[in-house]
Image: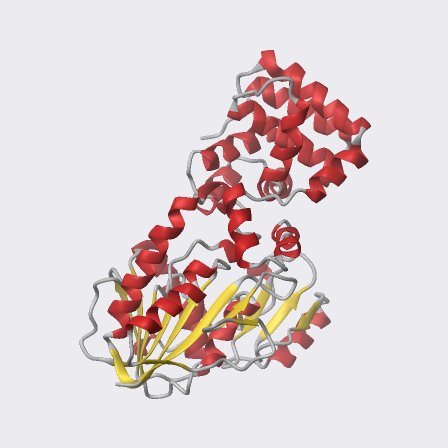
Length: 428
């Protein structure tokens, strides 16, 4: 429903309030963008994602400025949106202030618009000091900061700064259609600024903003969008030609497609319990022109589902806290809670135990998460190997990531998102 009485900042505030009430941004963003005038959509997107990235830093900055707590999520959100504009964008300060003060009135709190006005005006007078305070803030909920400090004591400060940034866009070239160098040359001829990435033979980093569906070769299936660190999955696997493979927790199908681009399995079962997200696999395989006759798409719960026969390889991209992809999904800062981690670890273990039974002797299970929390990664594997004497780690020898007791951890950086990989062979 269109809300013509709300200005753009008020629409941003409404969206951020929905996230605070537990709605995931990916679930609501498309609908919210449709309520915004086309010319304002880029700014709307920037203000929503940017404010979420800086949320806890803005909160830490704001608290000492208030004589008493506001205890009002709507007005606090207006403040954060206003401060984000003044401290982190090139929007003219007078425009940021007047539009945000109007938004405070429009969302129903005219009596508190004076507080918002006063703090934003102070921010324009003390911009350098405010920016320095914001830059120093770790920008995470305190429970998460404590966990990261415990897990990564020497990396935590750089990690917090990296998690505040926006992540770049990486393409995975569909090498059944076109070589990476050939596609790079086509991009450079347009010209689109892009470069080959270090790891993997299919990754290209885009160095400028583009509309992905309008990029050369999109409808022909020449490429997909996939983070470079996620692309490492396919090169860690043995040759899967003529093998039986399960891609567990497969949606939306980036890894499924990559496996089919690289190998010719006898059968690949793409398993996920989210029927709606599974539809994206079908769409992606059709666009990429990959042989879906080999693919069986199954909507089922990976903790209990049983294959008709044991298989040669299982790719398990396990459900996780997704802290490693916080830059792409900054709403996770608000949506994730400390109690979620223990529940997720239990779920991962249930899926691991169920999948392990379905692997042939001599087969490979590749355990993956997009988390950087040791409880979900290294510690999960320590427990798994302790309970499964028929499991043996196959060491990942690589230039990337940090070797753990088991597996290898990638932290988010300019090369890609936070991912964990552990390769396991079944002995008996």
